[in-house]
Amino acid sequence: MDRSSPSWTQARRIGGLRRFAVAITVLNVLGHTVFGFEQSWAQPLVAVATAYTVEIILELMESRLQGRRPKFLGKASDAIDFLLSAHITGLAVSMLLYTNERLMPTVFATAAAIGSKAIFKVPIGNRVAHFFNPSNFGISLTLLLFPWVGIAPPYHFTENLYGAGDWILPGIIVASGSFLNARFTLKLPLIASWLSGFALQALIRSAVFGTPFVAGLVPMTGVAFVLYTFYMITDPATTPSRPRDQVFFGLSVAAVYGMLMMAHVVFGLFFSLSIVCALRGLGQFAASFATQRESVAVRTPVAVPATAAVPAPNAAAAEASGAAAGTPAP
Image (tube, rainbow, N blue to C red):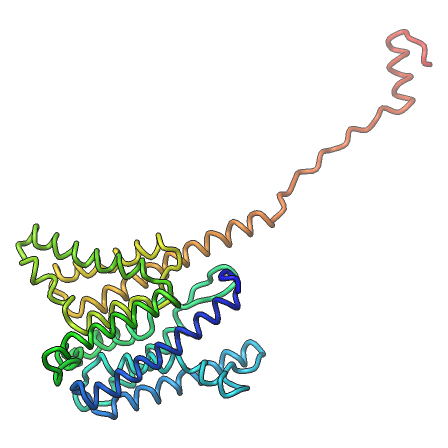
């Protein structure tokens, strides 16, 4: 199948979503039973239920406005594929946020994540696409609005693992993430530029502000950073597709993270990605607006002023002018 064809692109998208959904489901189940996740079982269940509900409601509204059948109706596989994105978002939010025993912040974060796909859209060519990473947006907004909500402690991903287990789990995440991003999302240039940029900003902070270079690299050793690198920042729907643009995107996120760290802003990983996505969305909107103005200017005909016709002299005038000049009229 031709890789440039829309059918191959859609097949690649669905294949990636299915494998990602399975991977994050297995990680959550093992996290709550083996690894040591500190949230209750209610957190992922409530998050997933909220994600499904909001996704279905928004699809019903959109399909009614567009006069088409909802995407989740039809075969069972269609409904499952439709809910894959919501499933991933719900589990990611519940896994990365820590809200103590309260469930409503998790509900809010998940609803905001799914809702951002319907609210923050920009026209791109002949389609309209969202530009915020959904789960990252929901997490960032919740951290801003609810100061007592925090990020899940990094140690809970490997709290009950010892010895080789501390290396095996990150190794599995890196291997599976590399496979998914090489085979389906094609985001390896973004990952490489993000990791290089992260090390570079640590080096700059060390040279300018005296921050120990190794201390600036410590976040890279956590499982949360590995998950963020291979499964969040590489969201195919909200990141560039061309390798050159991917490199610029990854370096931009690392640069914004470094500036946030220099300003002593916590949760820099999530805020930096939200800021870069917002800036990219504004750039896409500006480009779309300029393109529309150019197309309107091309289609609009330029009014040419009519030229007044000069009447030809009549025969009487010709005779009069000839007689005055002493020339007989023909």
